[in-house]
Structures are given as structure tokens and as C-alpha cells.
Image (cartoon, rainbow, N blue to C red; front, side):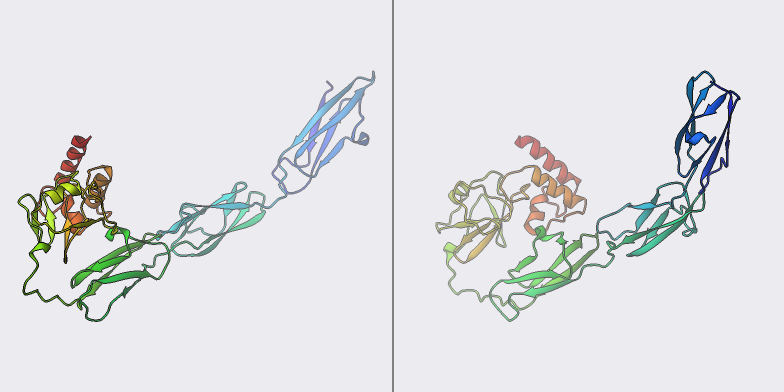
Length: 356
């Protein structure tokens, strides 16, 4: 290997060409590059100077340059949230090389920009050599507006019938968080009901339906006693049938009541049940003109048994995620103190273990 020196036009980061000059000891001559001892790099890379000595022995001297930068920097954007939200969205610039952001200088981290509302922001930046670039972040999924609701009643005049109210929303993908997620509620008597709901961005709201035009039926002078359910086994009051044991079949219930009148029992979807069906919370017994609602302690999903779904429903109520109401609240109130506490949750877990 001959002695040689390499001289570069610059060793600093540059946007210009780099010229390399090779000085090789006497007795050797360069045979590549048309015999020239200088080579111009227009971009980063390597070059082999080939040489030969007086005896015809050949060799190469490798030259490498990696400090040419002629391209402007580019960047991409990453967001901390990419779905509908009512929170602020952070846009982070991911540059193709090390850069300095020349705007957004008031931010603690100039590579990050916080969107508190929908809009766009352009990051402007410069690399070490002075090339400038820009990248625009656009956010259009922030929604901080509460969903609004409208109530539609199927009957708006004085009536002796039930009144069904339907809730409608001013935006899509709104979820009702009570009423088992249903968008309708049936008033069997005058009163109020509050629909609670949340949109896909997390904004919550509520609306209260009120019915005052259901006319109470006049009591019959000679009521048909066969329309009443009487029993020494079940507690029946205000058309609510309580103290119904778990896993009770419809045939066993009919056997234990004193009424001889035909009884039709329907589930909460108005499906007529057969005699082997289990009686659960929320089911209705139709006896002549009277309608009775079942409350089965610990059975919250209405299938007449205790299972993991019942445990999940009481847990969701306890953490205020999906409140229970009416007969479902009463079924979850296992210790009968008119509130649902950790004691009810513990009793539910014990019942679930015993049922395995």
C-alpha cells in the first residue's frame, strides 16, 4: 500500500458538492477517473481510486463522503387521539431528520401542538444546513357539544291507554345509558321519566319526558274477583309480585296461587312463555284486566336465574355506569333497604357461588 493523503474541499455538513484530492507517493499512478487525482461527490457515497505501481501491481484507495445534505426536511404527524373525542388532541411532528421548529416556540415542546378545537396547524422548521420544510396537522374529530334530544309521544290527547314516548337525537351514534338502552318508554300512568345519554365523543346530557293526560279508569262496581291473584306464598302489592324464588317455573307459580282464572305470562319483549319457562324480574302476568310485574331477588337480567350477567349489572349500577331502575333496582336490592350497596354486591357474589 503506497503512502497517500486525501484532501476534502470541506468536512462540514454542506449543501454543496464535495471535491476529494488524492496525493499518492511517487512511483504510483492513478488509472481510474481518467487518471485524475480529484473526484467530485455530488451526493453522499463512496468512490475507489484505482492505482498501479511501476511493476504493474494494482490496488484501490476507498473514499467515502456522508455529509452532503441537499434535500429539504420532511415530516409526518402522529396524534394521541384519532377517534371522536371531547378532549384536546396533541399533534406531534415526526421529522425526517433533526430539525429546529421555527414557530410554535411558546410550546414547552415545539414538536407538539395542542388542538383545543378542530382546525389545522402548520409546523415550520429548518434542518442543520438551513433547508426549510413544513408539515400541516389537521384535526376534525373534536366534539364538545352536548347531544340534544327531542321527545315524540304516540298519544298527546287525554286517553285511558298507555302512552309511549320515543327520544330522538340531533346527531348520530348517541347511546342511551339508562332504560336498558331503549329509546322508548311506556307510561302506564301519569308521571315522569328521564332519558340519560352520551354521544361517541363522551358528551353527556339528559331529557325528561312527562305525561299528564292518562285518565284513570273508573273502578268497576262489581269487580271480577277472578282478575285478582291471591296467595299465601307470594307477597303481592300494587300489582307487584315479590318473594318469588329463583328458578321458579311458570307451572309452579300457577299451582301456588288461589285464582282459577287463566294466566298469561310474558317476558319483557312480550313473548308468551310456556309452563316450563323460568319466571324472572320484569316478566308480566296478565290475569283478566290486571297486569302484575314480577320481582325476583338477585335476578336482574330477567331470565329467572342468577348468573354473571346479574353480577355485571349490579356492578355497573354500583359504579354509576348504568343505573338500575324500577323492578330491576328492587331485584338488585337484596337486603331490602331501598338502596344498592356493597352489601348487595357481596350477597350477589355469594348467591352466584352457591348456584354453581
